[in-house]
Image (cartoon, rainbow, N blue to C red):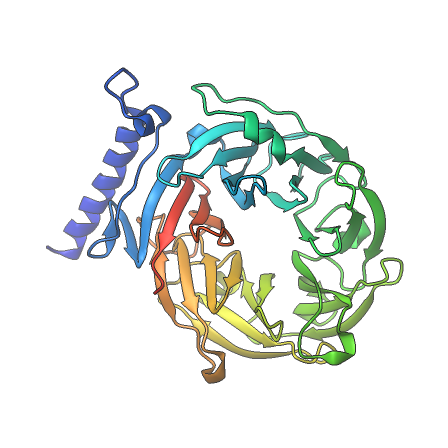
Length: 417
């Protein structure tokens, strides 16, 4: 079959699948999944799971964005109920935050939505601490930090209508914010890209989740796009036990950079070190390896600016006072890379039109080849802002959830050996 014919066939399949989702039966003959307007499970066979290109990743289920309250998808996180081990997807949309029970990953149940605190926003971010979800939104005026008690989901069952929840508490110390990070070991939240603290770290004590209090600012590196904060236990013994933040900063005095900040004393945070890197366009986000010796990072603008394929960058942070760029792994597609997270030796990346891409790190040999993928945007892998926004790979069940901008919630099963 000629390439143009194959492409027309794939486009037709996409259209037919979308139509079939909208026409799923709702009468007595419908299955539970059909009634809920869902798709799956589909095994990855001969490079496809249904219409989705794949390698070593099966589709367990897909919940379309319309079932999540509509709008567009953005961030995603997960919660495991400590009382019974049930797993939930917390799905950001432009209209609010949807909660989905994925304890049966082949038959997820949409429980309801927490509407946005102010206006709709293309950008929403969520993290979890002490069984509470903490939610921010960008370009959302006085949105602040929404707080939602997740334990109330235990008593909710899926229904035909979309239940509307109310926030449990609210923090108004900032209005808009692009992201929020939480250090679960210390009980502090870090809002970044907010309309306070010069766009840097806005630190909030959330040890009492429903009574958050302002703790301090870090402004020295200017606007921070994303951050990970940990109690440090890596190879640099000078900083063992301190609370350290690894920030992706696109506007430092030196340009795009990864900045390392000691926030142990919230009233006097200190910049320890900064690493720039070649071919930079927009320092976006990153995550530490489990030994805290390497910071894995994505730049959201280099594919569009320079025309290179997706690049995942690796920084040596074994000396926090003198971090340095180490190497990059170039992937097979030109898609823009977005949010990434690490479990063991694997990097789980949500890379817009290329979908979920999974790398296996071989840091001793400066390489991290792709070993699995699931492409939620089959049309193409062009460097544009469509498809996979983020993923969450930390469930004990080892399922991975992905939120698509136009598509909805994917529950996936990687087969990594």
